[in-house]
Image 1 (tube, rainbow, N blue to C red):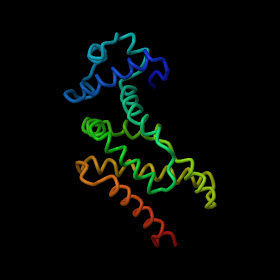
Image 2: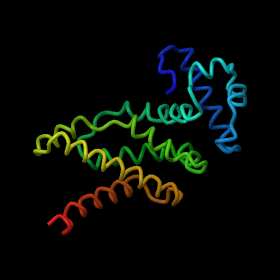
Image 3: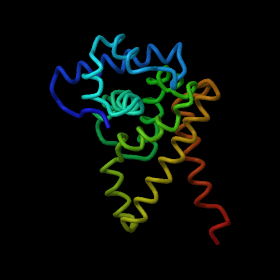
Image 4: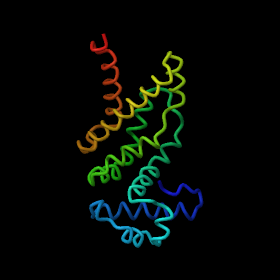
Length: 186
């Protein structure tokens, strides 16, 4: 876990460390990046690094958190189509970072970070409740949807982002609808 302090000095150190990490990751394998290298490039001491991060994985977590922070400031979505469209548009905005993390074998950490920081739509939660779903069913819905989003994101990255966010959102929505209609449920 990274240091979640709202102190401006801490945030600047976190941001400098994230930028330095991404810069190093462009040329180095993840496992070869050292705390000394990272601290030096970020212009912080090793002591500051360890005050802000427990491990290098926490730096990746902060990179994902930082990317998601702006996305979270958007207003709530009023449809699944809008929710998915915003998610994939956000991913496209983060294309360089997400591609780099995937290329360096860090998609699992990216996925874990996204699962922690991308929020569900409160409006859609209310709609799901109104449709008669129980809370465990709603949690299962969101978990399934997020798992599908992440798997489709991996595919999108591996296909070099050839589709538009709208095409990705439509494909996922159509896939979910088809699964729900499939005869395997009878």
